Length: 303
Image (cartoon, rainbow, N blue to C red; front, side, top):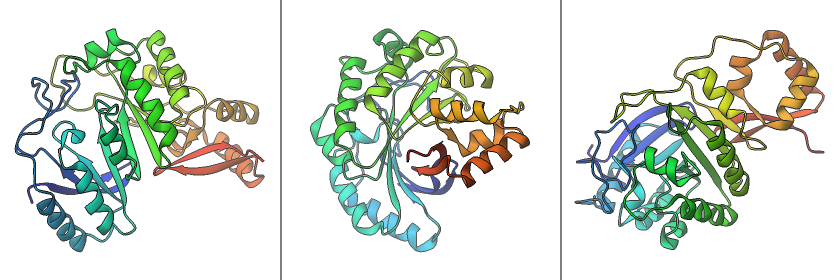
């Protein structure tokens, strides 16, 4: 198949069937330093865009072969919202997806375009990248097409979030020496608390990047994640952390009140004793579990 790939097992979204809207070459209005694709000059269009009917035919065939699909993911060798027939594609996918969820992975660059926003409204899960909150940082890490300003993007994401009734996920990719500063994350936290996404995913480089940049270590990523408050945060690790924390009941309640803990956090950061305390808190309905776009979080029970 030319446009459809997978299934791929995603820890955050389940079994995914992917759609690549630019299979022949990178087509992106960013040239992110951490991109796993080869560096390329930012562009504003996808050359030789695929035919919607051909994509749908491939999706139908794939769905007939694989009955365990959780999500259909719209992505690209670049930026999928550059695809000129995205609205029609989304409409056609919604007709055939049945119980599957529709997901798009976007760099946020065209969120100020109202036609793009209208299309995104029809999608079950929208994941937008937001690596920085300041223009200086944004310019260094995302290397956007001229004229794209981070202040405009954050304002438009806020406006979109107010109207969007499905799951909005924000992803932050942390690069050593660029957006790994405490001050930058404090500014991101301010913006994120205005946006109010369903959850925030924080990760770092785990594949060879386009440019000579480095990942941050797990300890630093955890430290930065704690700056994000009042929003569920999912940390994306290549390897599981080694250290287990033996939290008390009071510490667990304070921690969850400050920031909901994911199932991954509980499984990999909490000691066996701390896990037993969590189970007791669940049994007594002091805390509850909630699935947010495929990731389970533990939150205080707001009764």
